[in-house]
Length: 96
Image (cartoon, rainbow, N blue to C red; front, side, top):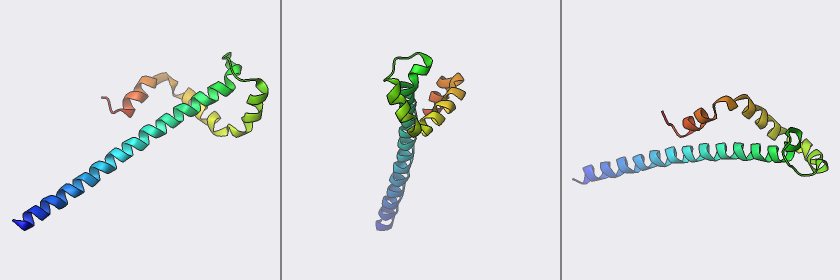
């Protein structure tokens, strides 16, 4: 009886570790998507004057431009895949 109880406990502990790993992986994925979207919003706020959006003064935008290399890359990647934003969100949440 003691061996069966020990086996069940080890099985439950392994199952809980796997479950924690799955949830941690999903959490990281959701946070990375949120980070990408926030970077896109930041770049749009700073560089919005080029497309007609109200934005901070041009001098501030030009001062921040050298530090925005990553945001510019994110903006170009997002603009390349904007044709199916609903599909991207459905893929993120595993909706089939």
